[in-house]
Image (tube, rainbow, N blue to C red; front, side):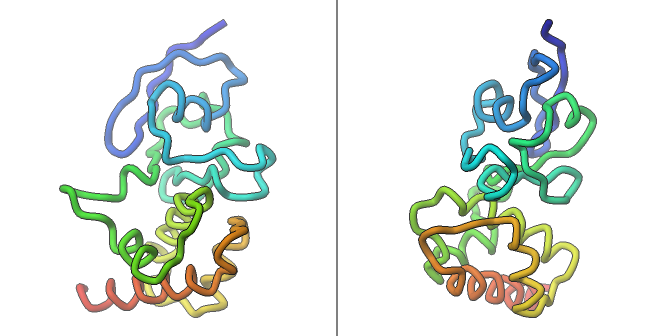
Length: 158
């Protein structure tokens, strides 16, 4: 049986129908047509499916869509504003913190949650915040550099 729900994603409401077992990942990609969220391991271990729920990173492959009703969701598509990339997106590009792109949306969203909570994190705090996000391409050094640069850039604009 399908249930009507409304998902609030990137400040936009999506009225969709889901079964009780529909994963948030599938609802976002297939019904809301926001394909920035990626499927990696399907077990909540890799972070490719990370989205923000009320500002906190979650594994959308391990969350039922119905559990997200009434929550504020943010996907990678929601970070750019008025045609301008978010500073984290720009710094990931500038510092080469992305390669194949599978982990990048989840990494950036986890980094955003960290910087929203702790605007000047140490390298250790950054690495800890990214512990749930796996990357097979970059070796993390460039990702950490990008987040440090975004943190410094954010501090200059405050």
